[in-house]
Length: 162
Figure 1 (cartoon, rainbow, N blue to C red):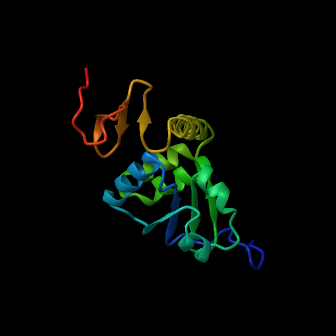
Figure 2 (tube, one colour):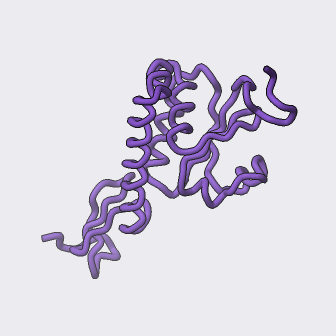
Figure 3 (cartoon, helix red, strand yellow):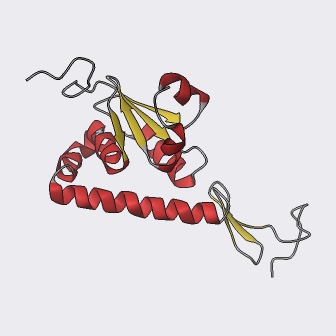
């Protein structure tokens, strides 16, 4: 049975656009990892809720794309959450077999758990101020720099850390 006109059911996937939160350290780390992976299906990575994302996909809830990973297929297919992760893995040469396993009922539970764990981690990052992790004693973890001391009186970078 052919899909109804105007639907994407059964349409082949020839290209995927991954919308990711450009302000999230985990999301940008995964983006960078994806860029290094051999692909069976081309991936485009676009910051969620950006002007580019809004231009390409005017019908999407762009606020929601910041909260939940969203992937859009070239025929208009929209995947969110665990399904988005599975379809991205399906597009990667080394991970297609894993994607097939994660698409089973038991595998879907594992994929959902991974997405929930990532969401919990991201929520903790927001609590600590975005991409970095700030402690009350003045130490800050910046993903690109590692741990640095940014306590009071350290504006010039020359202060005691003891």
